[in-house]
Length: 231
Image 1 (cartoon, rainbow, N blue to C red):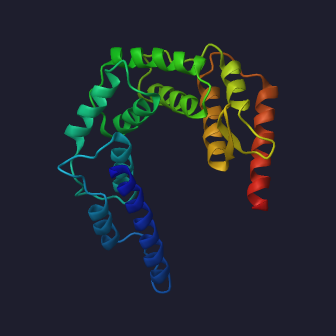
Image 2 (image 1 turned 45 degrees about the horizontal axis):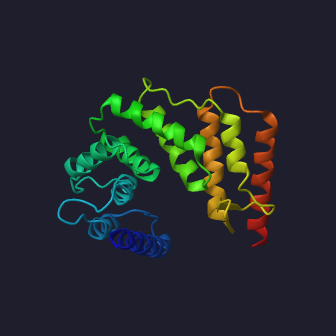
């Protein structure tokens, strides 16, 4: 419910920002003003000093950063507690880990490297066994975040080619992607996730990805843009 509120707030704020910017463009170009920042502070205010999820926390922190808001709410204590809890657990989902690491990248929580090593090991196992696009996307994304945040954890994928092929297996002839082999529904949004996952695999592969696979991915990108242009 709270995440839905955050999504609506984000949409409302973007519409407001666009409307005001268009009006201001007729006089003096001022894309972000104090009034915009005040609206953002109101729309993305935490409830009782925290957000309901780390995904919501990351979205709010990103908005504050983009708008250069200085007097933003301090949610670092409660957010870091959630980050440490998720990264220290053995039963969290790849999505939870992904957003925990996203928040950690902004707040620099005191994460134990041993916890990151355990997380990396689980994520690599998930990538190896995953069949759904979201599991692959969040796992790969989380491994890339670990790589960015520390150089002391092994995040390399032993079978980059195999992971690349697992992602490719979900592609469609029109450039869109399915979320799983059992779900025939496809979308351009899923294609974006797949292409981002491709980039992550290339970054994490312990050996060079076969060039033919990369060329195939390039063709998928071209097909995706063709379909967008027709739409």
